[in-house]
Each structure stands twice: as C-alpha cells, then as structure tokens.
Amino acid sequence: MCRILPRRPDSRGPRERLRALCREELVGFEEVMGYGMPGYLRDGTAEFGFASQKRYISIYVVRTDVCADFAAELAGHDMGKGCLRFRNPSKIDFDLVRRLLRATAATTGPVC
Image 1 (cartoon, helix red, strand yellow):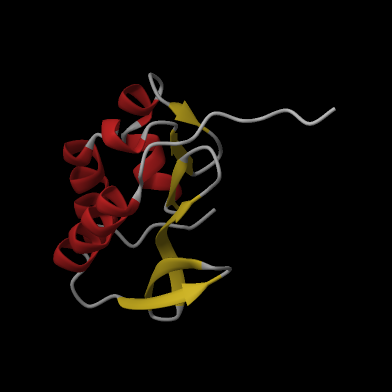
Image 2 (cartoon, rainbow, N blue to C red):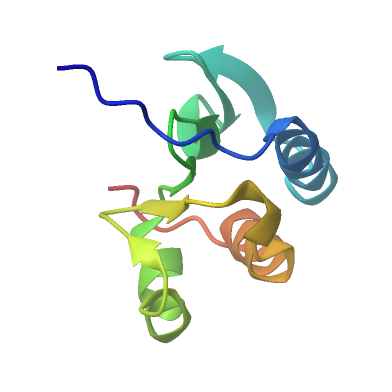
C-alpha cells in the first residue's frame, strides 16, 4: 500500500534567504556544494551548511562550542547532533540562524 505524504510548503524562498544570510555573515568562508547541499568552509574545514530534505530544512551547525553556547535556545527546537531541523520552512527562526552564523564566524573552536 502506498502512503501519500503531505506536500511540504515551498522551500525555495527560505533556502535563498538562508544562503543570503550565510554569505552576509560568514565573511571569509568559502561557499561550496558538498553532499548535494551548500556548505561553508574556513581553512578547508566545513563549519556550517544547510539542506532541503523531503520533509524539512536542516541547518548544520558544526562548531561544538556554538552548539553548547546556544543549548538553551536550541532545546526548544527539533535538534540532532549539530543539525537543526525546521519542518515548516516558513517558520525558520532567521534571527536565531543569524546569531548562530555570527557565533560560528567569531569562534575557532572544535568541530563535531
């Protein structure tokens, strides 16, 4: 039996906004495509990325110190190890993402 999944709201606008935010905040980072998603590298190391999955948009915060600093705020979200998921692209907290990007750019801590 085939189960029909509900259609996800259009994610193109939010993805474009995420990319613009990354390019604005991650000055000096190299933008690359890896594993089918945009990633942002500093000195050859991936530190941030995002992807549009079938049922959500995922944002990859790779700096462990940034994840630790934002643990209280991220606790209320669908969060895996370094992966923040938004099931509805129109509800992405862009203010939080901007702060995560700024913290990523400002630190050189370990990556997970």
